Length: 405
Image (cartoon, rainbow, N blue to C red):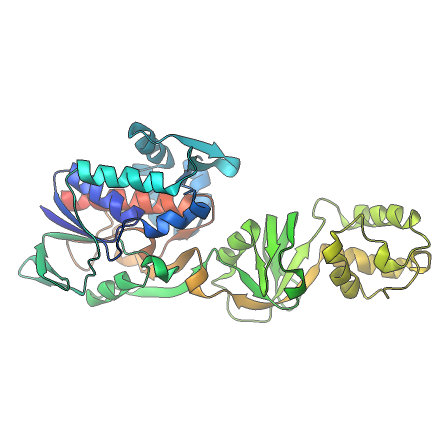
């Protein structure tokens, strides 16, 4: 059985290794000059391989089409991914949030592991080799490169999404899918910055233990996340925001507000009591100079403006009504929502090859026998924490195993 794998990311490499170990003659085509180019920058260069969690927790962290992944993740679980690394000599560690990294903190060590396994299993790797076309003719797939036309019995598409195009994610797999009649669900950024107005003065400010929400024009909370966040030049980012972006990227375009609860651990009543205590110690100060115990210095001006209390009003003159406005502001610091960052800057792509047209047990196309899909090219994505790489490994494993049979 001759199997072609198009794409040298985690899904493609796992598919190629698994197919070869299952007895197939495998060729891996990668358009870049080296394998795992996007994997190299993942986890800020440390490569968050997977998440050491239960199967149930894993699916709770899948944003799009978790049910489709039940079979694949059960066949190659996070535990299997960790065993795969350990059994091949890669020391790994588990950090906060059950995130799994190589002990060396070097993504290059993960890529080296896969490269070594490709060699051991006899996979023929063709680098700098872009696939210009794929057709099925006379019971064989013909792949056209710039130098030749090669025939295969099975083809696995593992070309990634449309994020970080400099790493080779340029949407090639979607074009191939369409050739064979597949639908492609609208592509959107996931795990990306949220753009909003009025935040430029706060660029570089990071906040911990806050709740970030997206609210509609009636103030109804649509989605929220707790954790760390960071202000950028034109919006917000950080772990909580990245996850929130993957929750809101399918909402219709409307007038939304990014709302930040700066004190989520305190009820409005408890926060008012806290403010009263602070004010009692600063009775003769101007309002603008009374918030240093409550807020980071760079956030004071923004909060004061949104509260509507005059900067130079003495604390002992602030009314109960004004104090309640301050409480509301600290629980609802507001910025007008502009949208999500460009898909180019998303960590992963949401959308992709329609999973209704893919057999979840084999990753084989329901429209073209012998054609398989794995990884980010599919309409599946998850939150941060190693879940997306695990999806790539699980679907790659199943696709490779199935294609070799």
